Length: 254
Image (cartoon, rainbow, N blue to C red; front, side):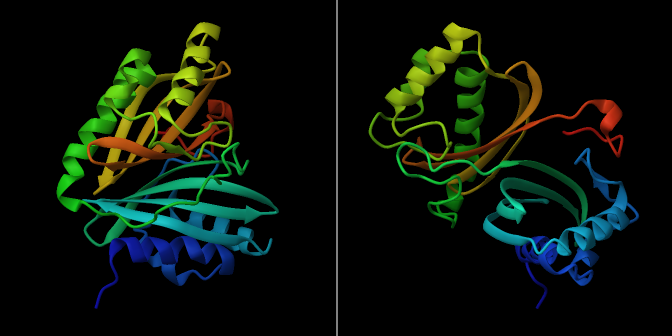
């Protein structure tokens, strides 16, 4: 029985620990497009990267993995001498992975409410609501995070049932509203400009956006869990986009 795309990506990411090249065979080296600016083009670059990382005794924990058509997206925890949290996205063409994006930051926290950047539910439910949930997250990010319509926040969540895993944030719509208002009044340290992709499986939706963090070009990956038509849980990573002259490939972050 052929492993699912999710299982193949789990094995691929886990091979970072071992340097084992076998799981990397899921990548189509002739067509592979790498969007991590710090990684060389093609699966040869990936093999070399994993082999180098394996010599540092890394630890890899694939916390969550989801499938959306030709895409697999995973929420990951790495320990490469320092602990990092990441999101990985792979696009498949048939049975092979042909494109990759990621967003990684240092692990921080726990936050004031005791939540880590990765704890919480891991399995998708409500698969019949995938498209409804995708549309709701798209609307939320466009309306609240990009357009700054903070007064619309309660259209998307309730005050008493929103758990935030951001290491600097707390639970509840009221605290998020206060944080967003402070950002708005202070000139938007976190400034969302554009959505690039919204991936979904059931009640989990990942939104990939770009903008500026403290004035620096940055990528924002926001994962939401939904229930009863509302956002109820959130995880995220923010990564600075390196200057073009530092890129090891020409494909761009997005």
